[in-house]
Image (cartoon, rainbow, N blue to C red; front, side, top):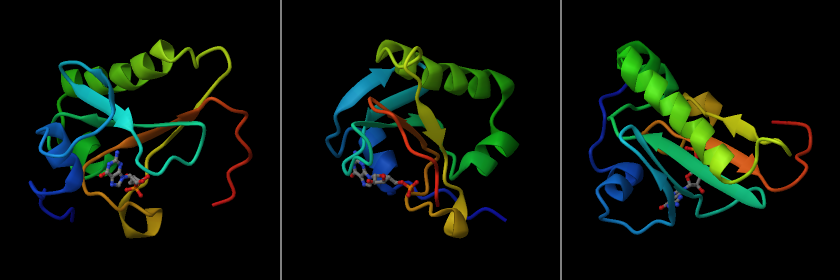
Length: 120
Ligand code: 5GP
């Protein structure tokens, strides 16, 4: 069972602009901002505006319009950063064993360099 959504998690506060972030994208469904501790030359986090704890929670509860809007938003961020031709990587950590630290769904977008194989 997914834990209840915590309205005080750091990304909820970023969504409400209570905490500053370097926003690079926003639309009806999602916002995107730079990761505070980048793991690649370009490391952006894309989050839905809706309150979902994880990818699993989102897939279970969001309606199709919201899911479609979020997926399109992720692709738009990559496209706007000219990452389609060179390529990029998406990652969503889910839960404890997945290494998820912030309990609001976020997709990591890595790019701006040739990425190595995933080792962990
Ligand atoms: P997770 O491990 O949950 O998949 O990833 C959480 C990510 O959020 C980490 O890459 C971490 O650097 C980033 N992060 C944590 N706190 C903040 C913050 O306050 N601002 C921003 N921009 N990123 C954060």
